[in-house]
Image (cartoon, rainbow, N blue to C red; front, side):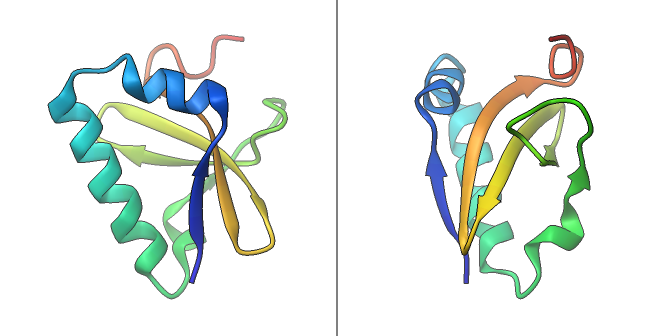
Length: 85
C-alpha cells in the first residue's frame, strides 16, 4: 500500500484549482494508491526531474516521484501546461 504526500509546489497547484476539481483529483489519487500495483496506471516521464511518472486524471496530469512506499506529488497541472518547463 502506497501513501500520498504532496510537495509544497504540488499542494499549491492543487489548492489553486476549483474545489470540485480538487475533490476529483483527491478521490482518484486515493483510488490509485489503494490498487495493488498503482504504477500500472502511470506513465513514465523523461526530462522532468524530480518527477519520474504521471497519472492522468481527466484533463489534468499529476506528476510524481516514488520513494519507498510513498508517492510524492510534485505538480498538478492541466494537460496543455504539464510539459512546458
